[in-house]
Image 1 (cartoon, rainbow, N blue to C red):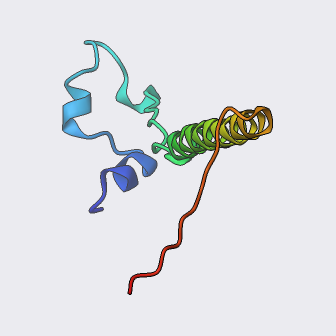
Image 2: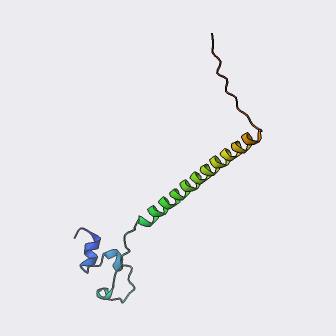
Image 3: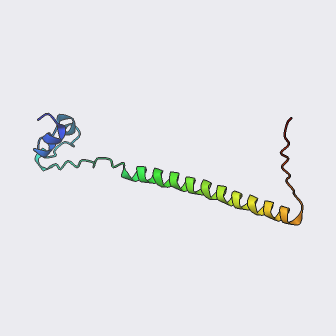
Amino acid sequence: MAQPENQINAGHIPAYLLRQLPPGTDPRRVVIVQAAPRSYAGPILLTLAITGGVALVVLMIAVTLHVASLAAVAVLSATGGIGLTVNRSRKR
C-alpha cells in the first residue's frame, strides 16, 4: 500500500496517528475523517465575476463620458459658443 489513503481505507492506522490517540483507546474503534480536496471553482468564478464587473464599470464610465462630451459639443455649437473652421490651403 503505497498511498496513505489506501492504508486508511483498508483500516490500517499509520503510526503517527496511533501516537496521537489517548491512552486506553481501542485503535479498532477509531474513525479517521479525511478533509475533502480543495475545490478551486469558487475562487475562480469569484475572480471572473470581479474582473467582469470592473470591466463593465469602466465601459459604462467611458460611454457616459462620450455621450456627455457629444452633448456638450452639440449644445455649444448650437448656441454659437464654439466654432471649428478647416482651412485647406494649397501650397504653390
